[in-house]
Each structure stands twice: as C-alpha cells, then as structure tokens.
Amino acid sequence: MSDRLIRATAAEGGIRAVGVITTRLTEQVRARHNMSYVATAALGRAMSSGLLLASSMKKAGSRVNLRFRGNGPLGGLLVDAGLDGTVRGYVDNPQVELPPNAQGKLDVGRAVGCDGYLYVVRDVGYGFPYSSTVKLVSGEIGDDVTHYLVTSEQTPSALLVGVFVEAGGVTASGGLLLQVMPKAARDETLVQTLESRILQLSGFTPLLRSGKTLPEILRELLGDLGLTIFPEVQMVQFHCGCTFDRVLGALKMFGVEELQDMIEKDNGAEATCHFCREVYQADRNHLEYLIQDLQ
Image 1 (spheres, rainbow, N blue to C red):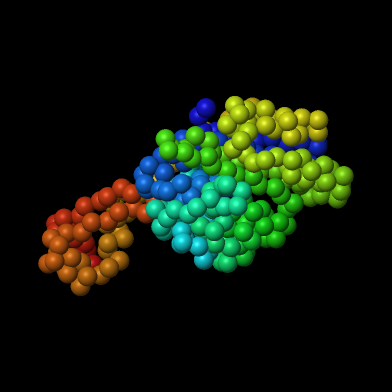
Image 2 (image 1 turned 120 degrees about the vertical axis):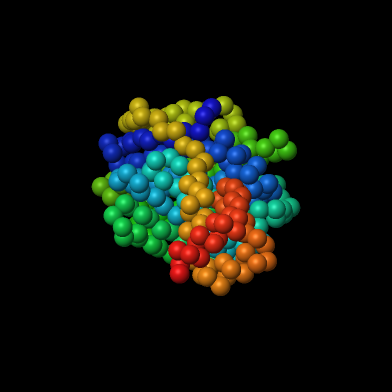
C-alpha cells in the first residue's frame, strides 16, 4: 500500500481522527542515512508524528518542526513536515544500535533518552511561527508528542506511532492521532470509552502488518460512534528542498577569509545535506564568485 494520510470525524464532530502510513518513505530515509534498527524506528515514529500534527493546519505552505533533544546516544532528532504531505528528517547518530528493551522491542526510549526536551515550531504561513517546549516523558516519541498536545495545545489526545524494521528494511510504519474536540471534552463517558479502546490496542504497526487498511482500523475503533471518513486521500512522501543555490547561500555566510582559505587549502568546498545526504561540490570558481559578491 502506498504512503497516505486520511482524515475522519466521529461523535458528531466531537472526535477528530487522522491516520497515516509512512512505510515507503521511512525505508527511503533509512537507506539514505544507512540507519540502525533503533534509529530507523525513532525517526520513522517522529516523521509520522510530524505529518499527523501538520494535518490539522489550514494555510497552504504551513509546516511543523519537531526537535527531540534527549540524553540518549542518538543525540538530536529533527523532523520537518508539511500540510502538503512532505516530510524529511535526520538523527545526529544514525548508526547507534541498542539491545531490545524488557518487552523485546526496539528500545527507542533509551536511544532518545527521557531526560531532555521536545521543541515544536509551527509555521502557520503568516510569517510568525509559534514555538513550544515540553519536557520529554519517555523518549518513545509517541508519548512525548501526546504530552505536548495535552499540555501546550490543551487538547485531550492519543497518538499511536510505530515502525517495524527487519533485515530487509522497513515493512510497516505509520501512526494514528485521535483528539477530543473542546465541545466533546466535557463528555466523560465518551473520553473514557476512547481511552479504553486505545489501551486495548497492542500498537499501530501490528494492525498494519495484519493487513488492515487505515479505514478498517478507524472503523474498528470508532465505527459505532458515528464515524465519517473523508473521501480525500492525501499522498505523503519524503521530500527535501535542498538545492545547489541554497548551498552557495550557506557557504556565503562563512565570509571572505574562510572562503579564501577553502580555495587555498581544498580548491573548493563540499557540503552534505543533513536531511537527504545529497553531496554538493563547489569549485574555486563558485567560491571566488561568492567572494566577489561579498566584497
């Protein structure tokens, strides 16, 4: 099944639901960065989370950035996702591997670390991004993003994200976001019913691996609560907007002396994009042009 995102409502608009499949794009990023199992799981979960958060934005061009900075060996983790269904991301130390946790699963929590912060920046398209910072609660990604939604956006939410990766690559990745809207949040029975059903789930990727589609998963959870699945299906994909011109713009920030040093020592410069690992070569002519422009 292709990577996609669907939206739905239930309980007469009192519940908002979004589901996303990110299997192919997570495998693409794993291959690009030559990532370990646990790094792939962490970044895949974060990319699904970013797409789910961006899905609620309204203005074209809106994007959300998630930066996880914990005390685990993965170091920092950054995701950039857009309302248009594009996403990219990277981790500082993509080759880090750890033994499974006590449940026999990939130990994303220890890899990210539970002592640290999640930084969220929402660019809603008006030139004034909104930023929030919350403490990490587990490092497991889904718990931390849920904590952000409840504390910073004050919206009762449940976020399930998961990645299944084996020797051949990523075979299942995606997530599910359920939110209780303000008008329904006072209905304690509805909230308790939703919480109970979520707790009964063993995770999101087991549902995908069993062959269930996103509509089937939503119908199992919310089918008796007046579920309405919107017909529009949005394709999601890995996309990095880096270009050679942007690389030259970044090199220009080094200043005349540093650029001259690059020419004398290396006869040019090489830059690698953090997000997609694309390598750009700037020869001495490019750098001399930048120097002339600065002078």
